[in-house]
Length: 357
Image (tube, rainbow, N blue to C red; front, top):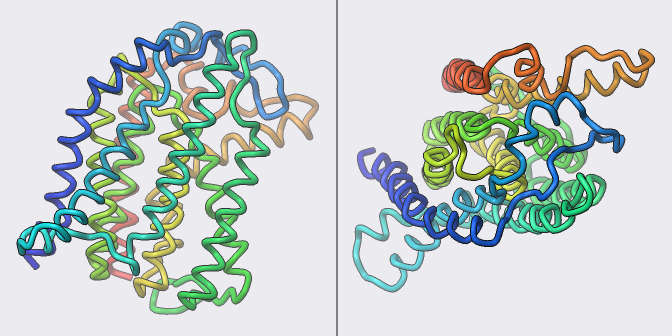
């Protein structure tokens, strides 16, 4: 038990340290090369301007670098691969006990972390380069959704065909069979969580929420004796906390797509791995643990449907809902702190239900 606890927490602390050390080098590069949007503003999914959002954030989008999410996945990957390499080149028991890269628990989430990081980084670069004369830039939404959808189908096929995951767990030890539908379900889950990445819109908001969610799933994985997966989750938390250290208002940089895409699609894999594979029900507790993410996505869906079927009428002043609170006059730091509080409460509740169910 003690060894397992050390394995889960020590790499997380080291990951945090790596992120703190690496950040000055990254920020110097980002500022030296003006890695931010050159024209403030954004458009909605229909290509229309978003005047309320643009007014709220007209001074923040220009002059603050994007790509801050690099700190999260870079520090996590260095830590994961570092312990793996040390275990294989230095014959010390300590490194063997701290190496948590394993085929059965961490290969798939590590792969999704890397894929999301790379695709998101490409999108960020194209958005920065393409925003000189236009508000919108980067990969189109259709392209990003297609990539994530195909990745979800591939991973769903792996879970279904290779790992014999044919459904999701329910409280009380029951089981909801999905059969081959497990493949599209995985893709839809990944797309849904990816859509929640728009929570990255206020300094410190996304980092605090994602750290809380991954910490909760680390607890679930640890309870299921998936120690390597628990260590993976805490390492991600360590990377997020290093990022958050510099993202607290006023943010030194933004997480942007390279961070949010990597985290959301990786979370989908972690959720599935703490379900049937862990003899639990990580999927069912997701709406509770990740309530801020779910609320973010639902607010966008509600707003879009309302504008389409109610002759342009809106439910919220601006979506996602955290910007609605800003439009009501809440200071951004108040929105962030209250989201953090709600996130912690929801994570504790979801974790408790997962452990006692």
